[in-house]
Image 1 (cartoon, one colour):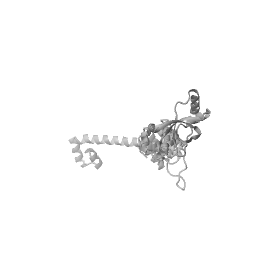
Image 2 (spheres, rainbow, N blue to C red):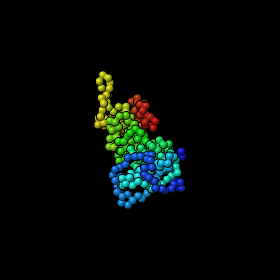
Image 3 (cartoon, rainbow, N blue to C red):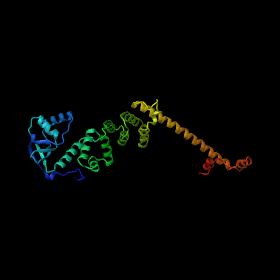
Image 4 (cartoon, rainbow, N blue to C red):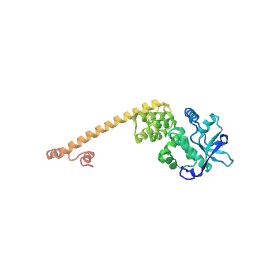
Length: 293
């Protein structure tokens, strides 16, 4: 099959009236009842504005490419025939076109939209071709499908609502267990960490280093809830911030001492005094720091 998902069928099509009981749904899907009711009301008021699309199968039946809602709406209104644009395409091309029609109407960050992208992939379309169809990079499509394959509906919902970026959702999905995922999702929503920092926190949680020493004779830790994990991680973050502050204070003091020694060692009376006291050299790390080592 071609790497492209596009198909120009205009030259290979004709329009005819077809009994609706002669049309098969190849890629049926559930639809929003409110939208369907609006469709029925609209067709009842102004008529059908656009034919459905199908291919003529080998057994003489018609296989639907797109238009399931229009067929069901006309059936509800008591109609028995519908105008059909009949395409001269293979069944493989029909499946691809049907999936594209559905995915074009759906936000790709919903589970339903992801199901259409997964169907495209499973039908043989390349990740790059799917990306061109939906306007995403291949990496973006791969990340979306990774979330879909693992059933990460909650994370996809967070991406769709703009609570977290897609790449953050992929990192969170790599956590084992729902409590850890829920905790990391909550932390990311609150703190908007960089990917590097988010991975570091995830690795810390996975290694369970943030949860303190093991308890009891077995050396095991009790199971923790998402709330408990969030508290443990925030406590560890605070501990690390305090450690960093102490390190930065020590560095500032060391720099002050080094600069003071540089000033003193430029004073020949001070150097003479050191020699008189038998102090001929400095600790190695101070000497190296003074000379830029």
